[in-house]
Amino acid sequence: MSQDFPKHGPIQCSICFGTPGQTTERGLWKFCNNPGHWGSSNPRVLVLGFNKGATQTRSLEKHVFEKGGFAGCRPELFRILCVLRLLTADDDIDAKFSAAETEFAFASLVRCSMAMKDPGTGAYGTSGRVILKAFREGEPMKLVRNCSSQFLQNLPDRLKLVVMLGVQEGYIKQCRRLVCGLFPSPGQYVNEVAYRAGGATWVHAIHPSHIAKNHFRNWTTGRGNDNGLAKKRDLALKAVGDTELLRG
Image (cartoon, rainbow, N blue to C red; front, top):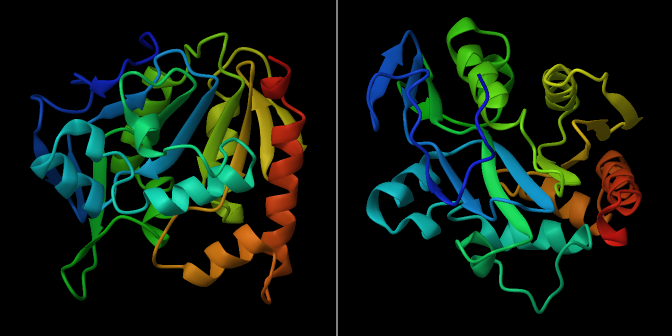
């Protein structure tokens, strides 16, 4: 059963785990019960990554809660939101992650943390191929389904835009299928990077990753050899502009 839209702070949830903070390993996968929500409990814009990475998880363990959300990549996230004309150069991105924020909220599609072990190196990864594998394998897909049905089915009426971070075609396809299946009314295709469901427009933007710097630059600036990313940026801008967001 879905719950009310989350409030700022750590989230108490035991659907997939027995106790708060519990870490479990299932096959190559490792999961940690540390869900959270940053910013407004009644936002106009919700920004969703896929999963808390290692930097965010370590930050939550060592710092105050407000510093954990998108730790290590907030400047890049700020740039993305400026490109989408949702923020301006005068805005303070850190303030958006506080309990006092009224317009924006930040979280991840999978509110807890998940990582997959590389059988060759033994190192755990949280991005890249791990993300699409999470949609294909049973154990991580349980978290994907549980998190989305628990935290995204009761969206505030005021919420008009969800920014999904990730523009890989396979990721967009999986998210569109997942999100549009959450609500009674069928979802609507908007363009290659956007769809409507649950009264909101869901728009995919580049992920603020340090790993794929060239992709980030090509999406944000439109310069470089990847015209496909520039096109996805323009489609995202068009979808954001067409929402009711700027009309109150």
